[in-house]
Length: 191
Image (cartoon, rainbow, N blue to C red; front, side):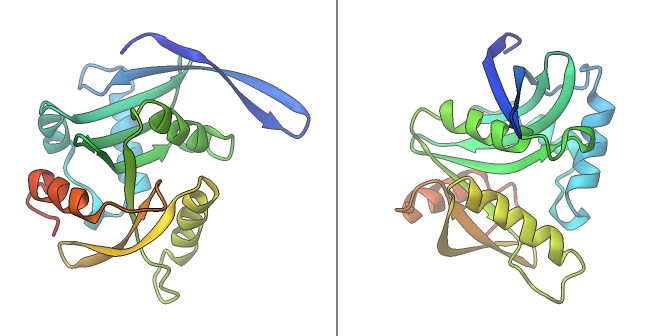
């Protein structure tokens, strides 16, 4: 996937800025590979990170995609998805620090929705625990998905010893399909 996506636009007040999004598969040969590793390290706590070598290895499986997004030649973010016939589990979505607060996160999420072939997209987020060290980050993450029309499913996902809320792009959550996806692709750490 090395070709440009259609031109997209971001709005800043009254100024409209064009984006020329290019999507590439993450490999160790990408010039930005070190930045991708650093972004994974900075964007996700250690207890949420799967080692990069394992992510790249698992991405060799059918229906697992590790993507880097560029605005022309500027690296702007990444996604890691696992899909079944009816559902996409968004394991990781992150925007590069230099591209944050510029609409890229919303655009990357809308790109995934547009290219999902009508599949339900599911993501897990940390619950908003006021005692957590990253409480503000948790609230921002939940607010981001809320603004992008994700719904709280009322379900939880247990990863190692941490519990996460499950959000869905569909107001009607397909719990059976989610269980199937988790059984197939749990990577030995999710329940």
